[in-house]
Image (cartoon, rainbow, N blue to C red; front, side, top):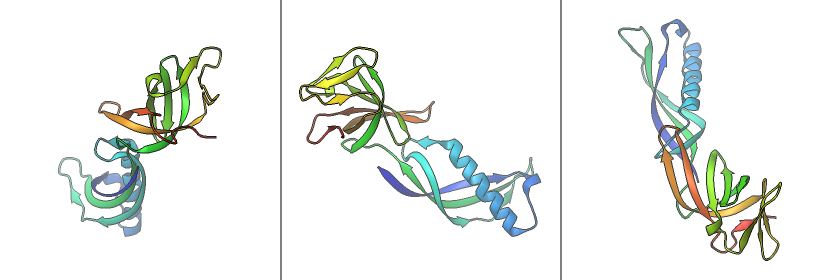
Length: 176
């Protein structure tokens, strides 16, 4: 699910980047905010950071004593993406294994669909392995699948989510 959130953030501008002209300072703050935002990647509570939409406010800078850098408190709006249990989404298969498939959905790379959660599908091995249903519906690489999220897990070290999903329900499965 996409979320619009407002966040307070501290932006540190190195002393050598400071300029007497206000516009250049504002530009430096925005550029530094975007860099910090991109490296943060995700948080457990908000999900993946996708885009800064607006800079709401910029506080007065405070000089850091030992370095001479200036810290500016800012408040900005951004868009994030987070998976929720029970949510129905679409993803693209990127790996087919004997016991299930891995999907991508937006910024989430590790979405696992177990063969146990694919009713009526059976594994067909080969050079390009697939899961085939009795109705000849195929789950293979690059196929778009509609699924329901049954659980998520936050990995702090990698700063990313993993999800376990299912096809058990109405209108779930490969999309033509």
